[in-house]
Amino acid sequence: MNAKINNLDPSAKKKRGRFGALRRNFLTGLIVVAPVAITIWLIWTIIGWIDGWVLPFIPKSYHPDMLIQRYLGERSWFVMVFGENATFNVRGAGVIVFLIFTTIVGSIAKGFFGRRFIAWAESLLNRIPILSSVYGGVKQIAETIFAQTDSKFDQACLVQYPRDGTYAIAFVSTKAKGEIQEKFPQEDDILSVFLPTTPNPTSGFLLFVKRKECIILDMTVEDAAKLIISAGLVYPNREKGTVTVGESLEVDMVQKP
Image (cartoon, rainbow, N blue to C red):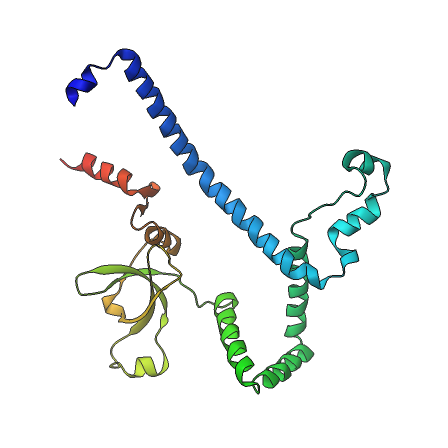
C-alpha cells in the first residue's frame, strides 16, 4: 500500500490534496450553514402552521393579501412593479393576530368577571366525561410549561443510574412533597429529578433521590442539555466555553507529562 502511494506522481498527489481541501471546506461550510438553515426552516414552518390555523377564523376580506390588493392594487407604481391582480403570501399575520388575541384574553382572565366566567366554564366542562379528562390533562400540561413560577430546572446533577457506580446527568426539579416525602425517613431530604434520554431530552424518567446522593454540578442547565443532546461529544469548559471531545482530549494529552 505504501509503495503504491509513493509511486504516485506529484500531480496526482496535488489533485488529492486539493480534493481533500475542498472536502474539508465543504464540511466546515455545512457545519455553519446547516444549523442556520434548519432554524430558519423550523421558524418558517411554525409561522405557516399558526397562520393556517388562525387565518380561517378571520373574514377573507380582512386577510393581509386582500388588504394589500384593496388599498394598493389601483396605484400606478404598484401595478408597474407587481402587475395587475398580484397576490401576496404574507407570512406572520396569523402569528400577530394570535399574539394580540391571546394577550387580550389573558388581561380579561385576570379580572373579576374573567375569573368568574372561567370558573363557570370549567365547572361546565367537568360535567362532561370525555371532555373533562382531555381539558384537565391539557390544562395541567399548559400550566406546567407556561406558568410564570419559580419551579423550573435550575440545577444539573449526577445521580447513580441505572445501577450503583454508573452516573447519569439529571435536572433537579423540586423537593419531594406530600406522600412521597412522608414515605421516606424524616431525616432524609428527597429531591425529585428528571433524567432525560439521549439524544432526545424531551423524554426521560422521574426519579426521587436522596439529596446526599446527588452530586450537584456547577455547569448550567443549558450546558448540561448540550452534553446530553450531543451524546457526550460537547463538554462545557469554564475557561474556554463549550469545547468538543476532540479538543478536550488534545488538551489532556498536552498537559500530561
